[in-house]
Image 1 (tube, rainbow, N blue to C red):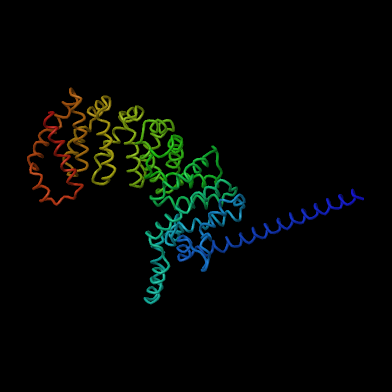
Image 2 (image 1 turned 45 degrees about the vertical axis):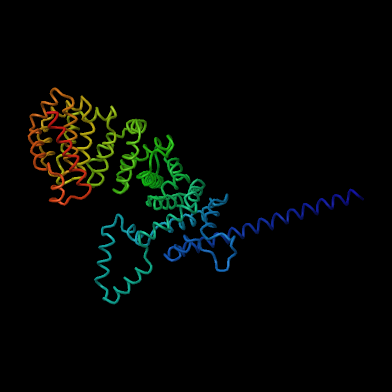
Length: 470
């Protein structure tokens, strides 16, 4: 009889446990469904500027207890939860974080990328069919609803401080769909456009996660787009970040993806520019990073980018190669006649491409202490024209670098010194010093800016050095 009672009791417990499990499962499912619906609604509402501002500023319902989490804190918490990789929920969260970090104006501009007309041209066409009253009403609406850059930057800072980058990393690590990954990387890229949060984003894992995505030799079209966005995010993060705060693996691991982005013909000029600026930043840090650039066949890639149709891309590529001095592989590349001819041509083109010319002359000046380079330069048929043009160009920044180049060549002595003498550099420097010996009067007469005053003082000092050495 006791056995029967025990058996009945055991069955009752099992049944109760089973019912509890079902109820818990049903409750969890209902909560999940409810959460999905809430995220969908939020994804729609956050497209409005005033909602973005409320969410970023820590919105809580009126009358909430002090310990209640804000809407943004709750979104971050949901994103970091174990079940956040659910496709529908993850995409909704990715969309919310993405929209919080962008302005309506930027979204409008992006919609016209790759189109036959720009946003401004489209707005002009639209305006032709509107009355003055309609135009005024629309202008007031844009002023009321639009985001100015300062507001967007402030919102991004708030998102970074609320651990949104870490939440996006968690979603990216658990995501299995291309669309969600694209949305998350787009959002990261938008946040990384704000320089003040790049360090926080790197600390919260954005850089490492983007680098981990860069694997596989033969990606399909969808994967190519994801890789392009990941590399672009790496480029944005490293444009201004001090390479010293990165780990060795982060520094060396970033070089390959950045060079691949520079080579990517489907990438935008802005992406190429940012990748080149980041490479400039990294290459100037230490020899190990320079070695990595060389190992990844970076010198010919950067050399090819110097011929881009976009002026700023050409400038950034030239500056990136400048920071490869004095790596032996780059010096070997530079002394080759066909390459040296290109650098001299860039140096002479200061009227059309001032920034490129300044960078190119700077590179030649930095390379001047190398004996093999100095010998190759003075034997180039355009050497005399180069020296005379740099001295007579009238651009103080270019002159400064040109005089530094001349001093570097003279210090080798022998044939290098004789080659400089033959260009007439000494008489020019003597005349230059005579004309501008009274610095205070010169500053007053020409109304130089502070930067120009510094350049003038530097050129006068170097001109004295040239006269002294010759």
